Length: 310
Image (tube, rainbow, N blue to C red; front, side, top):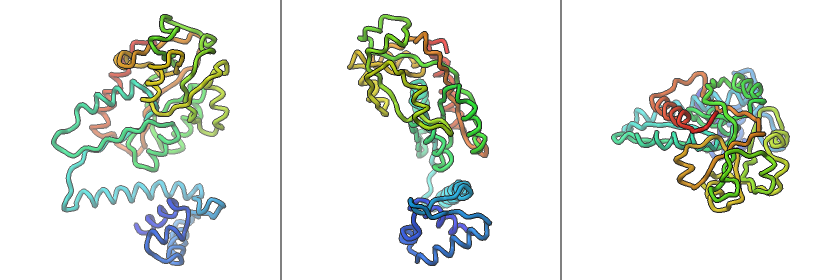
């Protein structure tokens, strides 16, 4: 096994085709097939199987490819570090759920960007599934996952299985977010029946390990609400809430600064007893950097400044 073999396997996974991978690698298909066979024999496992969707990694192949991608990425980084035109680059990457207290922390974190060196920050708002894949397959340094506490066993088992460390950020109940022009805005608390005539701004990309998406959504969505808009970009969500008074959204507790900026109000829903956890995750073989710790400090300050009982 050598570095070139790793690159061959990664390209086959990417293209799902021996022929296409060989074309991209500027080599003959028989030579590539022979190289993969030699690699499988040296490892004692089968990396790929041919399916109707093309060349698909086996379970052992998926594990091998995760390590292969890390090795290739680290070698590429070393080559860049010692190339003649190398410049120091401060890098930070994190995948997170849609949470305003998290984005507020990221904003404060970005105020201290190094003025002397090159800097690359990557902040991806997405779901739990993509967050985990970003860490395992795309070399993201950290992530934050959010889950309902009834699913904690599944999530903790997944983290252990994938070699990830989890550190609790906070446990909370969702708040109901409305425009300050909403008929509900004058209330300090509401019940779920009062939302039946409203339009919910919602997501449909919830993820729980080993559970069908339909079962997860059934536990997340209020069946009494008949009108719903699915939006995935947080700026659009807040714009809709600000400008359409009969909309609402279930959200993690929000900083007052953001509520004031968008003319919004968060209200406690007294009969929504579901509890959630936000958890910081990263690979067990990863050492948090100075930038990572700086972001975490801002994150905890943002969480501690929330004016709610969580």
